[in-house]
Length: 143
Ligand SMILES: Cc1cc2nc3c(=O)[nH]c(=O)nc-3n(C[C@H](O)[C@H](O)[C@H](O)COP(=O)(O)OP(=O)(O)OC[C@H]3O[C@@H](n4cnc5c(N)ncnc54)[C@H](O)[C@@H]3O)c2cc1C
Image (cartoon, rainbow, N blue to C red; front, side):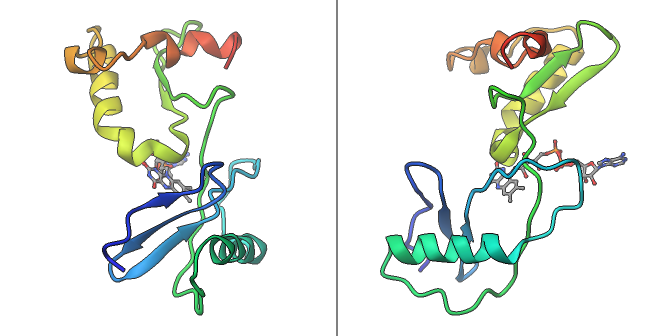
């Protein structure tokens, strides 16, 4: 099982990956919710198992542990990073959606640079990163 790569459905209706000798599976759901201590819903677990069993020659016999959380987004699904245009003492670092762990090393460096009045780090800019895509200014426009 450890040789199986992380596998994501093209429409992101599920993903799975081996984790510590077991299989980590998710329905990648984005059900709108007010801020709360999210708990795993039995229906979402059943939907996840069903989608994965339909796509692979796998039978999910037992769920060993289950977990839920909130993925926070703004409308365009890009993070929000920078000083607020209306409250310039307030710095935004939010909306990482489902990728906040993987994006944290770069996003944290960007946030530190901007918070200290600096620019986008060169190596991040060299990847084609555009600051306007994460700027809080866009929240009142397209985000
Ligand atoms: C089911 C699921 C799967 C995910 N999978 C991945 C993945 O595979 N890869 C990936 O990169 N990302 C993944 N993410 C996204 C990732 O977990 C988040 O983007 C990331 O945790 C956001 O980090 P954060 O520090 O901004 O917020 P959080 O991790 O939410 O931390 C915020 C903290 O603030 C605390 N807090 C809230 N309000 C208050 C308050 N008033 N006072 C004091 N403390 C407060 C909370 O308790 C929490 O500890 C997943 C998220 C979910 C829900």
